Length: 195
Image (cartoon, rainbow, N blue to C red; front, side, top):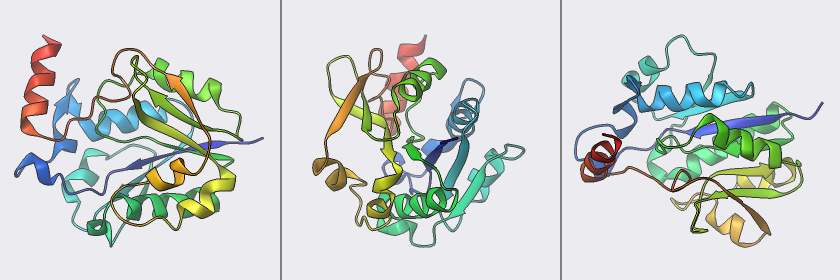
């Protein structure tokens, strides 16, 4: 039976947060990273989370969760380091597809992930978009592209890979696929909108 695996790339440095870690910001009563990993685990898929070298607090936030932690010694080189580690893990798992789920999208819901999983055919690249059609995340890559993913470089993630292949958009509600909180101001605005 073909399986999809989920990669949560959490090896970034949160540099735009000016001293705080965006992945440890509290949402729904727990750190954002734990909240997003729990969401991924609820799908029943295997889940891996990449970690930078000094990630004591992030590791602690995931205590007790059945998740694979992937150390990324070269995390400072950008998102591609996490994607390479995730591609290697997914290929070792013999996954038929890999969903890349960014951990800093707090509005994604369980129904959103189910929408993507139901669309998945293990052959097509699927990319979530918001109601305006703006591309976002998660992205599902079929196994045939994992070798290419294992060679990406820089901090643009899989952008170049996606440019050279046909991508099928999957619309999610509102800005669920694109609400990306990278600064204290973005967090403050998001929290204000929740009340």
